[in-house]
Image (cartoon, rainbow, N blue to C red):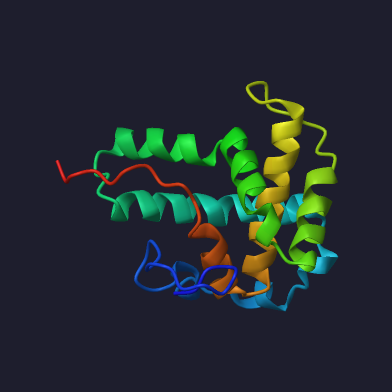
Length: 158
């Protein structure tokens, strides 16, 4: 497997790309993501990212539902997504940066109480990027970006 810079890396989290196996549903594949508001891209990106995290936790040996839930929350919260976006920002293409900035600068009208405005905006940019790549069916790139996620240590099956 190659990373975003083209260098060889270890195999990613999944043996096969997760999102190549979850195709974009019928008519959605005909939607141009450029025509969608960034908050709609973020809405879809949130679901795609959540699924990736949940599948990743199960494959890493988390089997208790409460434990799965707590680990998932820690990985999908806005502050974590904002930090993750900062980690990968340098390897994004100009197109991906443009999409991320559209999401980051979108005004949602609602900021959750438990997160700062800056982190919330950056996490929206991250989710917009994920939604955009998914709708563009750029599954290899999506997997490449998400494979850089800092996962918690694998658990022994209990």
